[in-house]
Length: 576
Image (cartoon, rainbow, N blue to C red):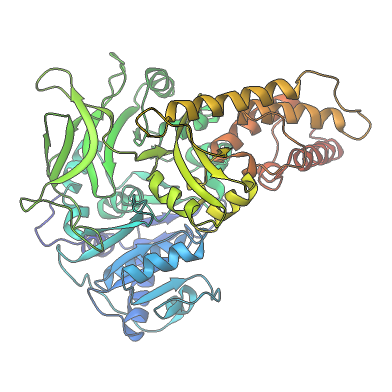
C-alpha cells in the first residue's frame, strides 16, 4: 500500500470503491443493512452534495451528532468527500457540552438523526434528508493538510479541548499498519467504539482504506458482552480492538465459542497484564495480540506485539514509523511527526513541532521498548477515557452550595474509578445530577465524600492522603452497618431473590448498604460493573438472561422482578 504526500481518507476510500464496487464494505448484524463499497460511495456522495447545497464549503468543520450506525458512516465519509473536517459528538452527551464544542470550532452545519429542538450556532441538517436528496458531490476534495477530524477531549481548565487532525496525520501510518497487522481485503473489522473518539480511525479508516469490511455493532449493544462475543463469532470477525478491562469480560463468553476466524487482537488505553495475555492466547494458536499506545493528539505513537512464548507485562512498545520520540531527564515523553495540528484555541507544539505528552515513560536498557510509568499532571484514564479531574472540579465549583472540590482516581480491583471529595452541605444525589447535566457519564464520579472542610498539612496544602483514608473509612463503616449475611427477606414476594441480588450489587459496586430502590448509576455503577453483575446474577439463577433484563432494570427491586418474569417466561415456553 502506498500513501502519497497529499493523500486523504476520502481519496483512499474512493480508490477501494472504484476498484471493488461490489465488495462488501459494511456488515449489519442480525439482519441489519449491508452495503457494498459502491452503495456506501453513493450514499456518501449524496450527503456531500447535500452539504454543498446547504452552503457548506471545503475546509469547513461539520458537527456530526449521530449514534454509531450506517448513517454515521455515510455522514462521516460524505463530510470528508466534501473536503470538510468531521467533529463527531455523542448524542447522549449533555447538550451544553455538545453546543459549546460546536461553537468553539465554528461548525458550518450540524448533522443529526432528527430535529431535537436544541439551538446551535449553525444550520441543523437531518441525515435522512441529506441521504434522500438527488444531489451528488465530493470526489476527495481537499489535500493531506486539510482537516479530517476534530475530537473533543477532557481539558484541565474546566472546558473540553478540541484536537484537530489533518488527513496527513490520519493516513501517514497506514502502510505500516497494513504491513504490521497484515490487513487484507478478506479482513472483517468490528466497529463498537463510541463514534466521537480517536479510536474511530482504527475501526473505520483501517478497514475502508485497505478494502476490508466493517461490522457495525448496533448502538447500545457494546455493553452486552455476550452479544458482542456472539457477533464476533457469527460475523467471522478477524480484527478487534479493546481496552483490556472490556476484553477480559468478552473472553468470559468468547472462550466458550468458536472464534477461529479471529486473528488480530489490538489492545490499548490500560495495562495489558500477563494473565490477560494468557487468556487471549488460549483462544487460538494462531492469534496475534498487540498493545498500542495512542492519544487524540497522535493517533498512533508506539506498538508492541506480545510473545506467547515469553509473556511479560506488556510495554507500550517502540515508536512507529512516522513518529519521532524524545524522553527528557524526568522521563517525560515528547513526540512529533504524525501528530495533530493543535487545539481549536492554541497550538501547544514547539517551533520544531514537538508535542509534550505529559506521560512519564521508562526503558529497560538504553534501546529497549517504552514502558508507561505515569503522568506529570493529574490526568487519568478511566475505562480507556482520558479525563482531566480539573474539568469535573470546575463543574462542581459551579454548584451554588459547593465551597471546594477535589476529584481523583481511586484504584479498585476492576480498575480505576473517580472519587470526589467536596466541601458542601448538598446531598450526593444533587451533586451527581449537577455533574451529569454538564459532563458525559464516564466523567461522573462513582464515590463521594462530603466534608465541612478539607484536612490540611502543616504547610497549608490539602492532605490528600487523609482524604483517601476518610473515604475508605466511610465505606468500611457503611459495610459494617449493613450487616450482610443476615436473614433474607421473606420468599413469598420475591424477597429472597432481591436480597441475594442486593448482596451481589454491594459486592460488585463496593457500596454498603444498598437500598433495593437506589438506582444503579447513583451508586457509581458503570458498564463494566453492569457486566460483572449480570454474570453473577446469571450464575445465581442458573441460566442466561436476555440483555433487556439488565438494561431496563435500574434498581435491585426492578432487576429481581425482571429476573422472575424472565424465568417464568422461560418455564412457560419450555426452555426453563
